[in-house]
Image 1 (cartoon, helix red, strand yellow):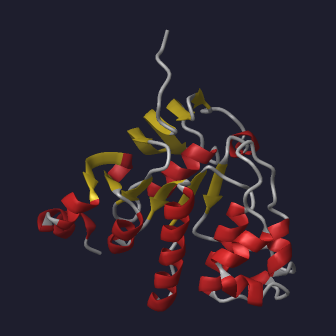
Image 2 (cartoon, rainbow, N blue to C red; image 1 turned 90 degrees about the vertical axis):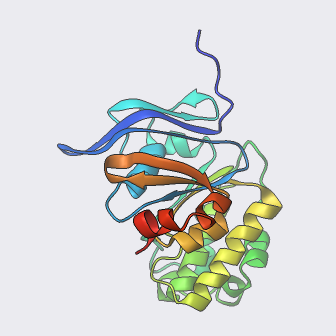
Length: 241
């Protein structure tokens, strides 16, 4: 009998394809409950595909995806989400024609960990959304849309959040605001975070542990923030854009 995993997310030797293209080849990684972990690597190595494999948008053909001790490898997306997973894609997918508040309300979902997140709590985390609550969500700035996407995810009361390139396309001053909000969210609520981020400096601020990914989803190394900061060779060879 297999021993139950203590990890909240565990990937065991997964292989994921886009059509005939073998994008992820034998990826294994894990997250413990309440951790903030990043996947670092250059464009095209399989970072986003890893998140899509976890959430079921591109399920692996081989290997296992285990969430909170349960094998969800071939589950439909909605059933995986009901395990308490929130996914924040790089594209954001704001619903046009709906106000900020309507975008938030449409994502409201009960949770087995309690209905902590509601409009007031999201607005307290992102006061700018309160100011723009009657505005069409699609007309917000890039940074405001990112805040709305995170807030909409929180309305589902997730215990795990998958964030794909949270700083993408944002001005530096807005990036700093979004990063601070994510850090505050993690410190205060200990939601487990798995972050894909092209800008390694942002990832080092958001996460404590990092998987260094190379082509085809192969893990080159597994390091703490301190270990990366103290190793200039790793930054130059693998992380510099």
